[in-house]
Amino acid sequence: MIAHFLGGGREVGRVGILSKFDDTQLLVDYGLIPSEPPQYPQEAPPIKNAILSHAHLDHSGMIPWVCTRYNADVFTTPLTAEISEILYRDTLKIADAKGHPFPYGEDELNNCLSKFLYISQNDEVELDGLKIKFHPAGHIPGSVMIEIPEYGVVYACDINTIDTHLLKGAKPIKCETLFIEGTYAGVEHPNRKELEKQFLDEVEEVVNKGGKAIIPAFAVGRTQELAMILQKSGHEVWVDGMGIKISEIMLRHKDYIRSPEKLKKALKEMNIVYSNKGKKMALKAGVVLTTSGMMNGGPVLWYIDKIKDDPKSAVFITGYQVEGTNGRMLLENKEIELYGVKTKVDCQVKFFDFSAHAGHSQLVKFIKDCSPENVVIFHSDNPEALIKEIDANIFIPQNGDIIKIE
Ligand SMILES: [Zn+2]
Ligand SMILES: [Zn+2]
Image (cartoon, rainbow, N blue to C red):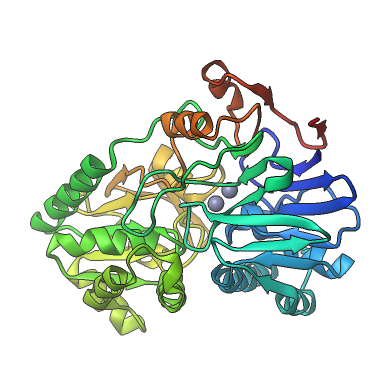
C-alpha cells in the first residue's frame, strides 16, 4: 500500500491520509487547523471515496470541500455526520464573522451532507472491491478506527484506550501496519479516578468559600463526561452553550454511548441556560459548565468577565488549549481577550487533564497489543518519544511525504 500524507504529519491537526491499495484509492480524514485564519492540508487529487473517523475539525473540516470538488462519497457514522454538521455551520459562521475567506460555503456543505453514507461502529462495507471494517475508537462518541483486513492495515486516528463515563476504551486490533495518532507521545495522563476526585474537591472548595466555578468544556464529549462527573458533586450545576445541543444529538444515537441512561440522568439533573436571565441564575448558583472549551468565543466569556476580578472564584480548564487560543493565554499568562480587549484576571485558573486521547504508556501498550510489523505515527509533535519502546518498522511522515509499505 501507499500512503500520502496531505496533512497531520509531525503536527496535531489537519489530518489527510490518501491511501492506495492496488487500484483502490481512499482518503482517510481531511481536516483543518482551526486557527485564525485556519490552516489547510495539501490539496487532495481526485478521489471517489473518503472515510471520516470522527467529527473533530482537525479530521473533518475539509471533507465538504473534497466531497463537493470530486463528487466523492463519504463514509462515516450517523452520529459523526450530525455532530460534524453543527461544527461546520459554526465554522462557516466564525469565518464569516472574522472575515477570512473560506474554501467552501453553505452550498458545498449541503451537497456534502447529502453524500454521507452511514456505517456503524462494528460494520463491514465493500468499496470498489475493498473490504473495510469499522471499530469503536473510544475517543468521542461516533468515532471509529478503520481496518482494511485484506492488507492488514488499521488506522487509529484519535483513540482513547481507557474507559471513561461516556465511552469504553478502544480495543487493539491485530494488524501488520498500524497508522496511529501520537498526540500524547512522551506525556502521561494522571490517574483518572484521582483526577476526578481532585476536580470535585476543588469545585467544592471554591463554592464553599463563596466563589464561582466556571468550567469551560468542549461541546463534543467533554461537556457530557463532566456532566456525569459533576452529578456527584451535590451542587446545583448549570450548562450553557453548544454542549446542550450536542448532548441531545448523542442521546438520539444511544449505541455510541457507554450508558445512555447515565448520561440522560446526569443531564436531567443539570439546569440548562436558555436566556440571559438563565445566565444570571447560573452564575448565582455558582457552578457552570460552558463552551467554548478554548475560550475563543461562546458564553464562557460572559461568565469569565463576571468573575475575573474575584480571587475566590476559579476557571477550571478541562481540555488541551491550542497555542494562540484565549485559553492558552489564560493558562500561561493569566490574561484573556474579552470582547476585543486583553484583560488581566485575578481569579484562580487551574488545569485538569481530562484528555480523550491515549497517554504515552497507553499508546505503547495499544501498539504492542496490535503486534504490527509497521507503525506509522502521525498527529503528533513528538513522535520520536515512541521509537525506543516499539519493536517494529517505524515511519514518521512529514506533510507531503509518500510512504510505501510492502
Ligand atoms: Zn479528535
Ligand atoms: Zn485529532
